[in-house]
Image 1 (cartoon, helix red, strand yellow):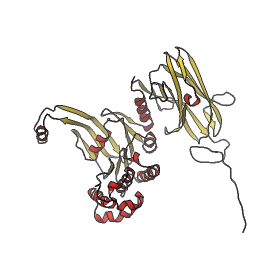
Image 2 (cartoon, one colour):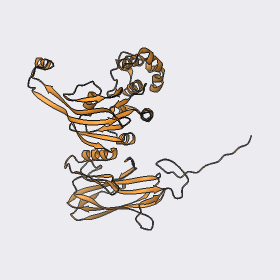
Image 3 (cartoon, helix red, strand yellow):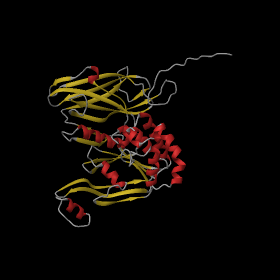
Amino acid sequence: MSTIFEVKNISKSFKVYSSELKRVLSWFGLRFKPRQENQVLKNISFSIAHGEAVGIVGQNGAGKSTLLKIITGTLKPSEGSIHIGGRVAAILELGMGFHPDLTGRQNVYHSAGLMGFTVAEIDAVIDEIEDFAEIGEYFDQPVRTYSSGMQLRVAFGVVTAYRPDILIIDEAMSVGDAYFQHKSLSRIREFQKQGTTLLLVSHDKGAIQAICNRAILLEKGCVLKDGDPEEVMDFYNALIADKETKNIEQSVNVIGKVQTVSGSADATVSSIGLYNDQGQEVVTVGVGEGVKLSIGIKVHKPIPSLVLGYMIKDRLGQVVFGETSMSHGVIYENLKVNQHINFTVILPLNIGVGSYSIATALSRGKSHVEGNIEWKDLAFLFDVVNLNQKDFVGSVWMQTSLIENKSED
């Protein structure tokens, strides 16, 4: 596929000068040594092909929003260049420049006009934008009376009134209600089918893995990872959880997927498996079949308290189900070196047909971010097949029955 835009060696520094006069004169090429310089982006480079959906993730302060502002032209880079081969539509901040004293309708004409559309072109889609926003009479009320969610509805309607070549969405989407998020995602997917390139910034792991076919992880202004969304998001999750030790390892397993392991390794999962009623280990399970998940743990250093967690993920890395030993009222305390623990839980696998993985987490608290001892993605892989249930679709299987009610006139 051909490249629709390319970011080459982008860096951005914000400089603080000893006086306002020096700052202004620096705009005209006069050089003064800044009193302080904060480098937000450092030699960022990547390219995106036509029709790709790319997620940008990173912790607060990683440089995500600054990068998007540079890409959309609202901020100039200190160094580097950007080549864009199509029309860009973006929602970077709530309100996207809406004037609080103008109505929603008036702001649509103003914002769409700034995007390059004529009055006639806006007239042709204004009713569609109003219908899409679904804010009723508020569409003709001042924007200052809007909630953040209502602003987003109008902003998204304007930006997507005409299909762009490149659609860029920042974290603003997270303020929308569940109904509107589903509605927006449907429009995004429709644009993707028609060839729109998507750049999505979000902390929502589910959204990144459901929509994007590639993810870029920023850390301290640099590209830390660029690749498969599941691999990148697993690494990002480990990065958040492992702030203390920075002990993160990734390796390719036997089926070619990248496994992420992080934590202090004071204890590790030594064995894991699924077992049927006959006690046999299985890697293929029937829909609705009951199995036992057995997890063995070995302690390498004294641990005052330990909580075990596990998650079942689908082939995209989306979490289907997860819980911890604390959910069962179990916290392992005062563990000694070389001590072994076996955790077994009965699982009715009422899930849909497909490939699944199990991730395990050992921590000192309620979650893996509270003292990460070991987080291991792709710790176990298994498949679910439909052996004896009626046909169904979806990620969850439910036992249903039909009540027939016939009547005659």
